[in-house]
Length: 200
Image 1 (cartoon, rainbow, N blue to C red):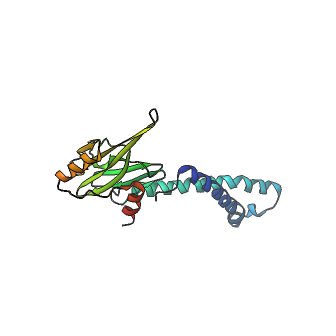
Image 2: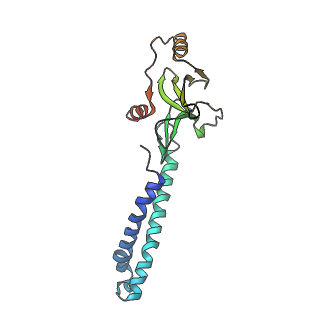
Image 3: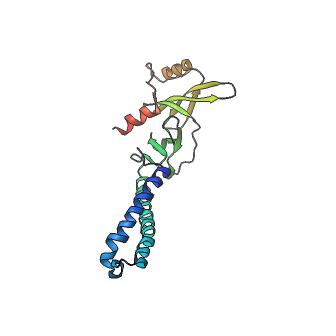
């Protein structure tokens, strides 16, 4: 699973860094600076002042390391899962399934470093199956005004990027049959697909 969200990371890291800063100020630094060993009010106040400074330094250092690791990992098309509140699954280069916040709806995007600029207009994808060079599945959108959810079926050719959409499951199955697929693939939710894909 991608790393924790920014809000959660900040809530956890700030107190940890402050505690670590206090440890550096009161425990480590006095061993290197003889003056800081003094227990007068002035030196105690200085150590208190150094606590958030050391904490801020550790906090910034942590994020520099995290972003450096993320930058390196994000170059790996086949193994990069995304980060924070953004999730991804590679399909066939340069296509990828991407999700934001939750694993319940997705879109198909183009891998950023591929140089390909052709967009795939499929959103929001709800169920999928990757099958014989294709991504097949359903998209659905809930219309609040009329209180109804519209579902459509699609076939994305991962070789050409072409998309076929169908308003009924019957049309979808007929088109699969024309492609030589007599038994329709088993469509699963994005959460199930995520678990099975990254369990490999």
